[in-house]
Image 1 (cartoon, helix red, strand yellow):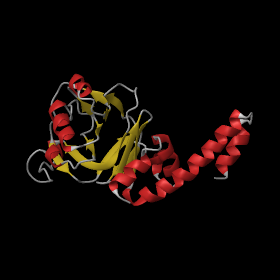
Image 2 (tube, one colour):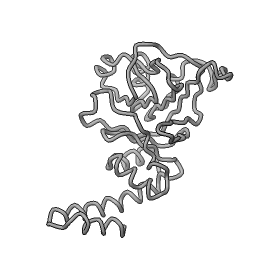
Image 3 (tube, helix red, strand yellow):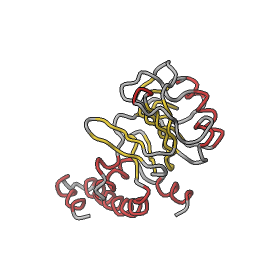
Image 4 (cartoon, one colour):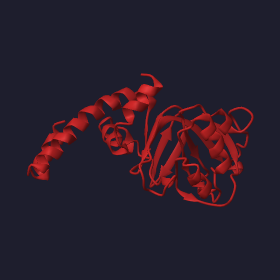
Length: 223
């Protein structure tokens, strides 16, 4: 399936729909990336939605004994492909921000559709003025620090759960949160979502017509 066709297909559904399908495909946590919420262009409001393959970026503390950056020379944002979602993993417990106004301007110029940061951002007013979608854990005024790795697997951890994102896995984000679809499961996920959407439509109609949740749920269990 082409990039544009995949984007168009995922855009029909919410992150909830994607997670439902991934649960049925035995993806841990339904691919949900916990703790990451929308900060720009608005704080958890509006119609923002991002869909695209992950361009992975990993910052690592220079104290971990592996301080040699990988991924070529120059700033990583100059290598972002059009249509990508930039997914940044940050050192644990850092107070630094790893995304800001300058990187946003360059990413927009290259056609990135949004950024997801397992950490903090800064220049929030500027990001909102640019209407650029960013999901993050929090904000901070301090600049990034650490060794940098580009286009490698990254791990997002919270509540004892580790989610590994590979380069070019698909990222879907909206007001409900951010989910990641393994590249190898994209077509199966889309096929299953179509079926589940029909089931939910039938459940909705049943409830509107007076059925109990228990009765309607039988449709879901049989799907």
